[in-house]
Length: 94
Image 1 (spheres, one colour):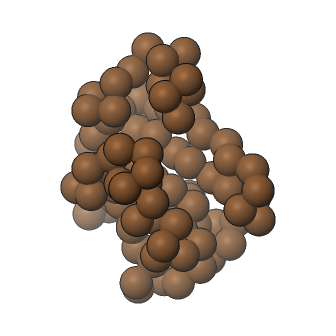
Image 2 (tube, one colour):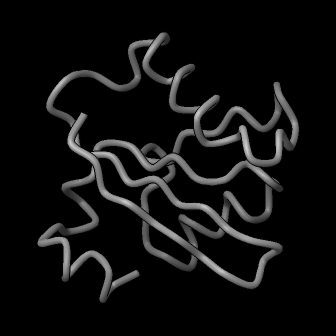
């Protein structure tokens, strides 16, 4: 993640919202503990929706926008996983 953010030219603290794949509570919590994101930066709808598989990131993103958690010109980090073996990420200015 450090290399990814360096290549994007972003610092962890500059990210307004992290939208992770919502596969498990443990996985979402790892974003804070292992990857160094503050819990307030990480959006999770897992407790309400459960694991929505491939729809989890777009669904969480839509809900965060509707709730006003994400607004224009904010920096977002979307993180997806594949069977816990691969990780993909994208930075977005909303």
